[in-house]
Length: 310
Ligand SMILES: Cc1cc2nc3c(=O)[nH]c(=O)nc-3n(C[C@H](O)[C@H](O)[C@H](O)COP(=O)(O)O)c2cc1C
Image 1 (cartoon, rainbow, N blue to C red):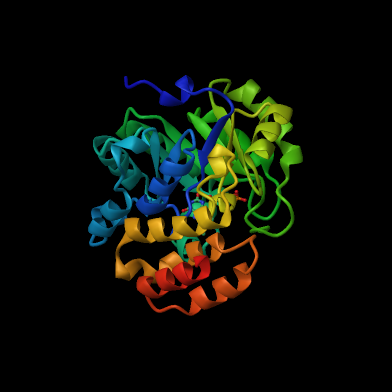
Image 2 (image 1 turned 90 degrees about the horizontal axis):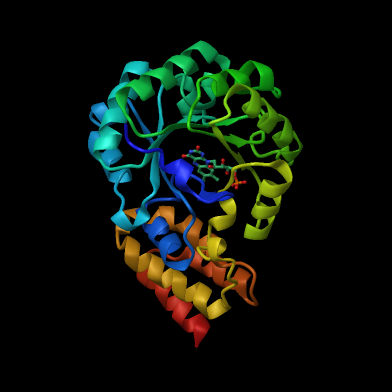
């Protein structure tokens, strides 16, 4: 039995959220350099895709550098047999854990019965967890929301806890809420109590709207949570986990460094999300951001930044 790395981490465990189209290998390298989280997550990949024509692109998403350990691969899908196969493969690739997405509200994902659609099929969700565990010895975790149309703590969260996953990460919103309304952190304590009752070994990580490392530590302490996951607040801010506030020059030089790591013209449009996030919070940010958004390639972006810093 491979050891459960989660048990060795100091609490609160502060982790970087999986964000498709954002937390790719290049952004994770930026985080590594400027302030690493306790655990990395990959962007999600389809378990079915891993064994079909899409295999090469899935494997591309699952690339990581040895410095990123501990790192968890996130997967989505709806067929338990594929989860079993994917779990073996992910262990083989050297990941420390496998995380099952049961919260993504994207219609294309839900249409196939994956992501948040699993909240409506508790029996299938349980089968998927069991099949994943059968495929591997690395710890299996789940990331989900509070419910589908409403909070379903007893109907959804409790059955998940009873499956004794290593970690349950909860974005404190329902599927219906998407990003509307503030995350419901007031439910954290109740969920931790249910964990103590049904699955004392399962760690609970809270997620939703956390803006700073200090806030993450406060929320963990106040609610007895084992960890906190941060997503959007890390965009444009690879210093997030170090608590450092970079000056404008450092921030803009980071864009150039990020571009040099990516170094792939095909990823230019995806990089615009990052450019947008980096160019905030300093004098002249809006004008620079607007001009960068019009840029056609990396060299135009670099020139705009160099000119701004003159
Ligand atoms: C662009 C983007 C992509 C995301 N992709 C994923 C994903 O692949 N898997 C997942 O579980 N959650 C995904 N999420 C949700 C985040 O992991 C997180 O649960 C959510 O953003 C709330 O946390 P935050 O308020 O700290 O951002 C994504 C969010 C964003 C903004």
